[in-house]
Length: 98
Image (tube, rainbow, N blue to C red; front, side, top):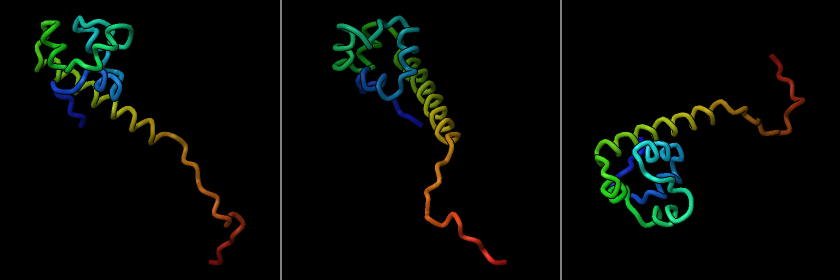
C-alpha cells in the first residue's frame, strides 16, 4: 500500500500517482501540473498545501492514499492481463516421446 505523507512534495505525489490530482482539484487546490503552480508543487509539501487551502490534512492524506492504492491495484491488474510473450528457446519443433 502506498504511503503518502504530509512531508512529501505535491509534485512527487502527482508524478507517482497521477490519479491523485483529482483529489487535490476536488479539495479546491489549483491545477498544480501547469504554470506557476507546477513550480510551487515542486517545493511545497502536502502538509503546506493543505494548510494553505484550509484542508484537513488527515482527510486529505486518507483520500490521497486510497486513490493511490486503487490506481496501483489497477496498474497491477492491467499488467497481469497483458499477453505473455514467450521466449523462443529454439525448441519449437521438439517432440516428446510418451
